Image (spheres, rainbow, N blue to C red):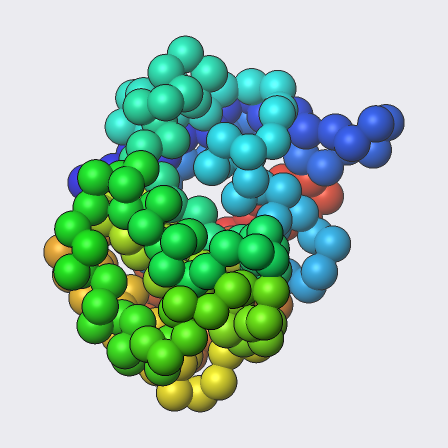
Length: 210
């Protein structure tokens, strides 16, 4: 069971305010943040994952991002919308880095690599990867180990239909084990494939339920 709590949040880029709200809380479940490009979805996800500064407080299971940043970040996995990695490393080198950092079992990723059709290219340098391959690699790394909250920013971008089905199945499997998800998408998610608990959108620097 998780409890994510954001309080007294203000986020600006220069003089431009992105967020200004008093409270937003989530508990166990799968949540969808919808909306077009430029609405603030990625900024919010980077705030929650501890990758961009902001004013206010943010806790997960009463662990504060600002007071206990290492412990906080260890409970979250974040996959970017458009992942970028050093061109000279291989897929396996990136994956092994995540495995080492999270003290994960290397065997756990094998079935996902196969299901996403990545087995034959994991030893290739990521500079040779297409955007779809990079997206799949980012998701493989995101699911290394077990964390409390998985944040997937635009997970369907550049994904083919077969890979999207694999992702839906994986999210469902983890959800049944008690893990939670924050998903963003400007595309329509297939609601019949995922037990979405609640849908949100960003309006006038506020997070609102749809």
